[in-house]
Image (tube, rainbow, N blue to C red):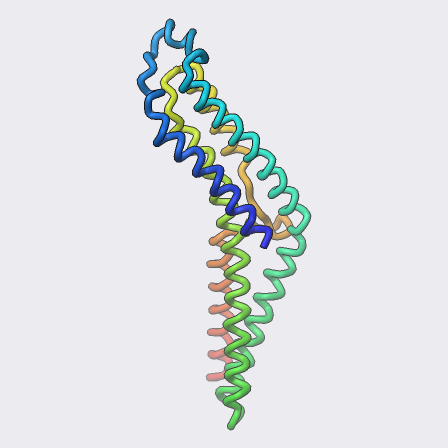
Length: 206
């Protein structure tokens, strides 16, 4: 799936920053003085670290642009998918309630209804979870840039500005611009489903 491919690539980029923080500890030993600052870029380890950061950031920008373009292109599809799936789940729930209370000898129909009900819930959760996971993994870079082991004040300030840039240009998916596709949407959708099923049960009791 495309979302899985995005997730893996963003995860690999984040691992690069994690390795930089663990393996290039010797850069922390650079003296923070005016003299040290002036010869910062002549330090071999500094060159290596900043080169890794620069390459990873360029790749991240390209991936982020592709992810945003895909999100814009399929935002209406996401909206239709979420709305349709929620309606189908409620209909299946109503069918299950009807079969279990008003029809006799309907075991096979009840099993089929429960199976389809479970499949649709799983499909809705999987799609929302995939979008949310990609967004979360892509937006980690903002915090990971603070872990880059640079003691030079000027360069550290540049990394902070770069971190703020990535935080502001966050990656996310929306359902036709109406709401973000994340775990809060999953919670809202399932709460709505449960609420309508409770209403149907109460109507049946009356």
